[in-house]
Image (cartoon, rainbow, N blue to C red; front, side):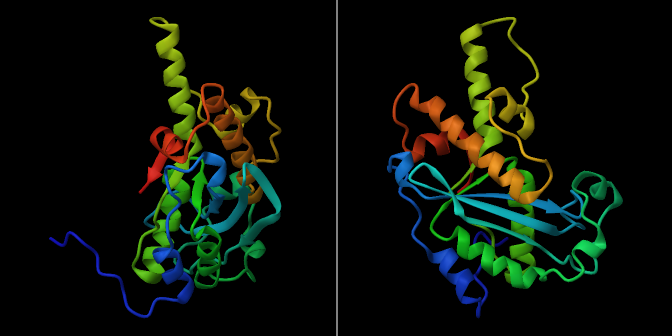
Length: 232
């Protein structure tokens, strides 16, 4: 059994830069770290047979959402990953919508350029990071790298803390859906299941969650990673 995966030769420059970039220092105050918030839509939810269909990214610098650096693209899925009809009912993307979209190998290098040297933020890492990993392995034989934060994990952290405070009898199923969390904090919610809209909602949720940390003390990046980290 191999403990370490050898990096393939002749990787695109953007992939090498992403893999070799210096990671943000966990000791930094949270505002000093740069973040890229990502959301994806897919042909389905099976990592073995489905693929990326749309990607949205929003950057956060110095604690502020950078709408001037927002980014969204559709993706033409591989021929072996047709759009699942059940997924169409969710995101509304039809085969003709992505017929002329750029293919995966044209999109992923651009995604990685926008993630290089930054903290990745997602909501439910199994989907967003899972499909990014699938794409990177398929194209380059490498995995995505951290640090990364899952706002669903941050929500679970706060809900668990609240149950500890309230004591016995407070147990209930945690509400971790993006819309429910945003609405519970009084945040605007944009039309769902659009990769850019959900990335923006996730970015706003993340900033609201950090403000909950700030009610106690000024958090550092490592505090956010302890509570919601999902990728080393």
